[in-house]
Length: 247
Image 1 (cartoon, helix red, strand yellow):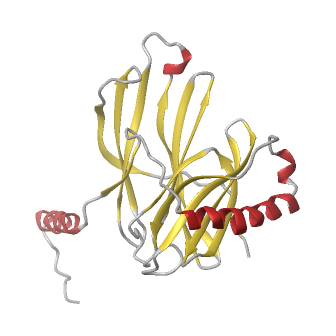
Image 2: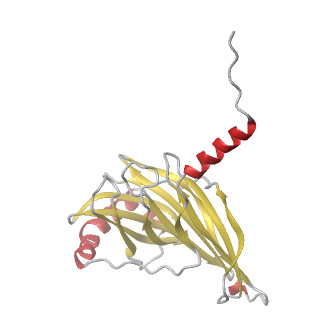
């Protein structure tokens, strides 16, 4: 029986190194050190929120009984908006993140409406943390659709936390890539030597995108950020939020 050629270990190492070198470099997708500025809705989008989005959200939460938990005198409010191709490749769409109401401390009934040519083409509702921002990612998995990154945050007893989730509207359902913490500080608790920690999240595109993070800290609530951990792989935690697409 002919012997199979055996590659020297040094050659195998060189081939592995070449394969790694051919992988695209991770690209930043979120930086918790930055202050996020909400996008502005157009007049037409504000009208659409009142005429189409709010009534649909109200119907859903009332039929499910969750609207009864809303803190009184609250109205649906738009939080942020971003642009991308969210439901079909090359589409020019806008994703409006809104809060229907708050039902508890840092717990909201929220939604995302995808708008194209003045029409709501997808409407996603979910219950979870108080969301603060929405962003479009550059098609990490190569299917032509922009993934959605959601930032959330909460403060309790003077301590603040931040997190992000990554989702995609895939046909008649929602794909949840996962979530991770992004920020923490205890400077509101009156700590004498308070500190803040923040992460920069990066992603390498692919059929199964890979995620990475860098860590930063600062003394106080306005000091200079210093890197404390170099780029390392990041495993997103399971996102247990129940996302539902309205019919």
